[in-house]
Length: 375
View (cartoon, rainbow, N blue to C red):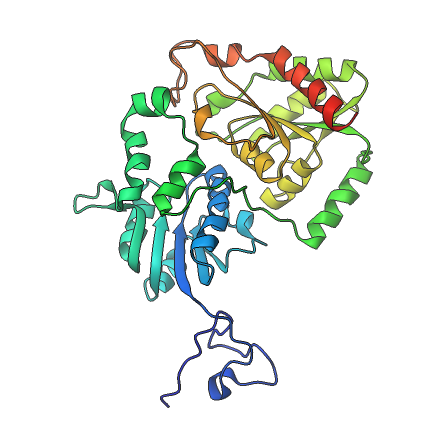
């Protein structure tokens, strides 16, 4: 009974990879080496999960022969489907935690500065631990030298808000101890989704020749002050429709449904109000229809970056320096507002940063883009 269990990515000990071959008895028919076993822990914020996918090519350069596991929240897991660099996506739940605690890894890499993610890093058996863990008092700590700068950004507001010019991708590469290149987000549609996008465009009367502008109108309820006002959206859409050459679609998630319906009521039949309750994969399909996405710093912005759209992003309370648009867009932020960025959930200054958004710059940027890219 001391037969060697195959060390192959495809072998699971439950059923054969090939119906005519017993891998346990006769050895692997098509052995795919496991290589370095790597676990990524990234639970918090769907936009951050998308941004972390940009580190996968760097991991594969450092560990070309490797097996990558990723544990995340159930709501974010679909963002990682169809990703060629990830071998297994696991939901953060008791079952997955139990399984992970029985495994041994070469590396565990925790992106999140949260107690639950840090506790999971502590609990996993790994030769090398990178990112953030917990000390004996339950405090979040950096567990490798490469995580020190990332950690300090969370502890020093002056460094984070006024000094830092590094993108999140840059200092996360340092945290993971991999080379930082200008690697893009990794997000892929499957064949059914590609077909759905074309079918939906036909259904709502959009063609390949249309100039389509998507408005991602909302953001997470955790930081509601990232949003432009409804009135600002109505102004922009009115001005764009007056040009008689643009098509407009509204984008968002379940928390944005009421807001989008209000905006749409001002332009009924003139713009497209995409569904907000079809899940994040369908939401990505709707966003893919747009050529340009106008958005705040939100999951919708990160999705637009992942979809390689031209992004016009506004910032107020969050840090614009940490976002990389990959030369596909512009970032609008208050130049001379001492209190911005701040990451506050409540504003004592009547949301000056939102009032100061340069709407005319948005309109001219849209014109400039289409004149250059779709003359």
